[in-house]
Image (cartoon, rainbow over all chains, first blue to last red; front, side, top):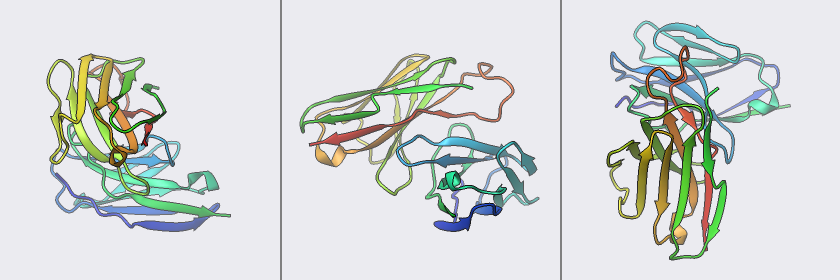
Length: 108
Length: 121
């Protein structure tokens, strides 16, 4: 089980780029890195998943260095509606345990 | 995209009663479903892994006789909180993983329900 470490909270302003880094020093060869977003009183929502290098979709980018011991979720030009908790999960399909997450607050 | 329906979204019950929460995968089959609970301002805590047609695997510290899980079909898993007490009040969330091939061409491997807020008086 790859333990993950994320900052507890982050503040940003509308229109800025936000980068949230997750450390996972004991990531295994078969592990993928997945990020979820959660709003209060809702289930988590998938953002992005990657294995190595860079992955980009319509909402975010995920940067993974060669040693895969960390990953960075990049949210371009955040808005107030991006205020949420962001979770980094590392593991295989059968291991879906959440870490503490990062509470992102976007200010006007 | 794939949808997981969780019902009810909110339930209030008296202490000592049992509450059943349903988790349905609407447009895909799910051999494996997961149940979580979440207290205010805390992360999701995995309670158990539910596999269709077999007994659920519970995480350490989760009472299997207290939280009964049934996964009788490939689209439905239920969590029953038996003899609920105020300390069981929490937000319960389910997730479902599509059986291989059901949701092609996607990196999204786990789909979550919208959660159930349980309040035990």
